[in-house]
Length: 75
Ligand code: F3S
Image 1 (tube, rainbow, N blue to C red):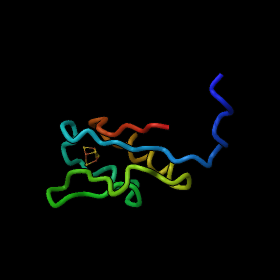
Image 2: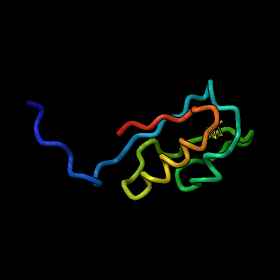
Image 3: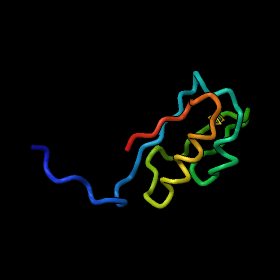
Image 4: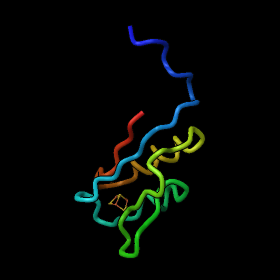
């Protein structure tokens, strides 16, 4: 047994960008600027890998928008 599951919708998710895969399409930032930032060269930068529950959908939408599949989300 591993204890009760976390309460639904209250846990933070973790966002990770594989910088070796990101090619600067900037779609993540266009879809979810509250989660994904861009550096000076236009590559994805994540100010905080811990995403608040209210931004989880935006984080997932941004990840789905990346044509390189550079973004992974850990629940
Ligand atoms: Fe990079 Fe994909 Fe965003 S290539 S800039 S993580 S849309």
